Image: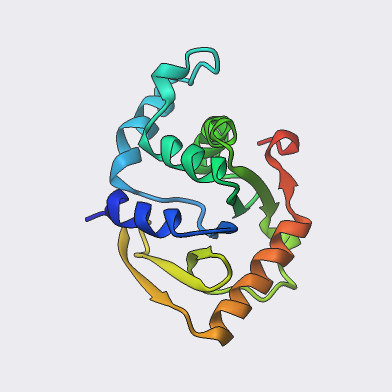
Length: 174
């Protein structure tokens, strides 16, 4: 089971100022990445100069939202050395950046003193949080949403702390 891009599209399109995403896992097994990850494991790499080969609906959505002036930022907390999956993500993150998303990476060892939520999440305009719940193997299970001001404030504070310490994608090597 996976989250519908259409449903998520409505959420991100509703953002007026910001959509931020905090990722905490070293491995994900989401349906729409299985084939790309397997190809990457076999040695396939995206060609930055062959945009039609790697452009996909998610990137259209990011480009649409950022063109309206919405800041789309993603922070990833990762173990070092990075997992094979994180290396795969890193190799393709230039596509997110090309669409207008800002991406930063924070080595997990530099996050020990930060208070972080237990699950990945998206936060829209600091007012709504959508937690992404995964099982132990990295399979998506469900999303939970809240607009509770205490929780949204905690998530905004956590993201800002991670963002300040994290390394911009262009400077992070795996």
